[in-house]
Image (cartoon, rainbow over all chains, first blue to last red; front, top):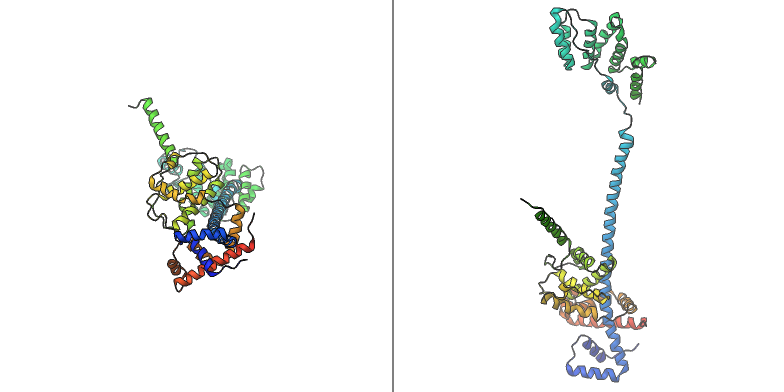
Length: 243
Length: 210
């Protein structure tokens, strides 16, 4: 390593900074030609200045590269977030279709009753006693229109209600959620030979009355009778409640 | 009533508008605000426009090359901007970046001649010409760059900053005194000499690559 004197060093720096006068420039060029050591030092200083420029450029380049990398990472994180979110949403939808949508539902007693209960069909107008005909017509009409309260009120006004009328009245009570009023009617009808062909229906509605009150015994009884008309429905109902 | 020909004409017209909208043009609408805090802000502001332009006019290069050229164009612009070269320029900044990048692509061997860059307005052409020395005059090899950068990195942070201010940003000694917080100009001058000498010695100690 060569140690320059201060005068030469200042001369080189003034040359690098472009501060030499025309005369000084000529002298500087002559010195470079005649003094190899001095010329080598001039080149070394010029390289130092180049190093500043190259180094600064490299720093700017590194700054940009780092910035781009950060942006990429940020974008990847965002994409990953979206991907995870969408995957979760897709899984939920698929899961719902596979398991939720087709999964058998579990019912409470009340829900099971609501699902199972279908009011018996009135089967059209049944002619009663001549004085009562219009009243009975209105009662059936109200029943068919599912106007339960009115139907019950009209059924009550009949002087001698027929078993079928009573059966419909019990259904109307069940429909408005009063199984305690429907049960004695149905129990009476069960003993009535005129309704022998509807015994299985009466069993079913009695079982539903009990179910509405939170008692599955009636349904269980039906399940114990494989030949019963309502066997399959009772069995399905019981399974839904058990789950 | 519309005839078939007229409907066809309108369809073509709208298709034309669509393509024109998607074709990057030289004179893109840009905001004139070039007071960016640092080079990364500049990058964020123009990267979309630039990449669109590069992809359209230089499809033979892949996106990594486009990115690299954009970095170099930004650095060349930034260095010159710091020197105060473009202070009074009213041309859109994207035009300068594109002008610089166009020359970088040509330096890489691209034969494309883009009329709108060749025939750009005088102010922009002069501005780009003024920085062409940085692009064309640079003869340093990759090994030499690594050597020079390695030496520069060994300098202390203060020396790096001071020398960058003086030799890259071409600040005057009194400005450097103010920026660096030195007592007076003499201190700044002495510090500059000392830092340059240290850098020269680091280079001498490491030995020049062939």
